[in-house]
Length: 267
Length: 257
Image (cartoon, rainbow over all chains, first blue to last red; front, top):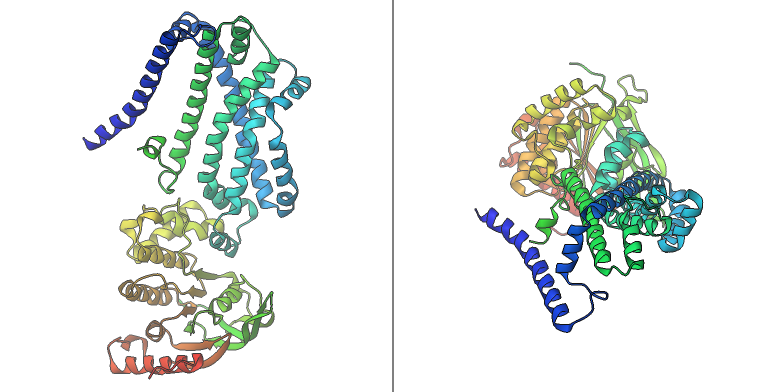
């Protein structure tokens, strides 16, 4: 019973905050008379969403696909390359600083290069998502694997475990809690990357992704449609973040303190 | 079961750490085959360094540690078949008790069926069967150490190296763990080296006690009491404790009376 009340409180509190914000927004726009071009009301945005639902949902699916595939590439590459960098001191000294510097290059500046190399289309959005999501996974994997308990390392050494066995049975499982944190950050970034990729790699058609919907709506001065597409891209980001958090929770909740749900963190 | 157990001989072992710290200076003693020798001394006297060199986790700057077979020749078998229990249990937090105990066999490539059977056997003998599916975080400190001790048995070792397995538990749990250490030693029959800083633990368990001070052997004490007659409250036991305590105090330059 107490648990149920707690759960309701956890769900109700953020919903109340959102409802309050939307009402305040609606009232503020109506009272101030700001033009709908500058700032449409939430009600108007809702109506636009409903009227353009086919186009928006189609776009969201495209963007989700680019973000998810980019995220998957970043996750696999980040864990593999990060593990190699963590295992080889020379790579750690040579490649890690380089990766850190590359991370400083703004994605929006790199995006045109991706178009030159990969052409217009979904693949460029996937690549942009992967580029921006790679570093948090890489950094988390390296940090996780270099901080594995040296005592446990010694135990594996005593029993003659090979480097490969130690990676599979110790380094990787021990660093999963930290890798999951990196993956959660990467999930949010992947959606940003996908949208930026879509901005530059413009592929339209009936199923244009959200990045294109936003650009087109901006050129047509349809601020309400821009807001609707932005809301949906946030929803895609939240869904990907939620899915990664759930998988992470499933992997670590039994043995690691970080395995608490987002809901438990905000209790 | 009669086995050709090795004895363990430290011959002039010295260890100088980078920076010039002499952790060990010309340490020589030997642990008879199948015997239990306790190494006792104040913190920082080099006890753990000695154990790490015996385990092959550290190298002596000079001198040697040899496993000597019954024929008097140096044998590689002792090093190949040794088990170590550290002062922290070193269990994998994501594995339950059975999977942790079976790990040394898993790392040696023993089949799943065989290693689980063997792990269950040592877990049952240690009275840990009710906890076998629990994770380390669901066990008390004393229970975790008992799991670590059970794990040392799973490979049927010839040599057992125990590094202060009772240092992090209360007095009562220590006495229970001492019982478990004696059982583990007797079941395995292994040549055993126990690092401890408890005099009564050393007297209760060992047949030879090496008293160390600042990296060197101060005295080698043989415990005259038979294993079966070690009663912590008997006068004979308390006299042994007093003798070792005085030796330790002389080594450390501490006035105890």
